[in-house]
Length: 96
Image (cartoon, rainbow, N blue to C red):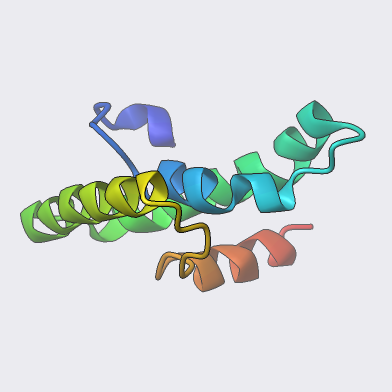
């Protein structure tokens, strides 16, 4: 479903991966771990965002991206989960 949308600069799923992905990766098998754990969650977060996206949420996402980038460069590593995260987790577990 995400392929129906034109690509943008950023998505909540990619920000989630940027801020939380390393915490969820098992170093023994990172590729498998990414495919099985992170990618489905990342796509679910993006689908939830796209179902409600509008110009205001897009602008907010751009500012959030700038904020997160500045904070990461400044050394911050702990970030809140995106608002779509908990709904995405719920949907993901219902299908598995």
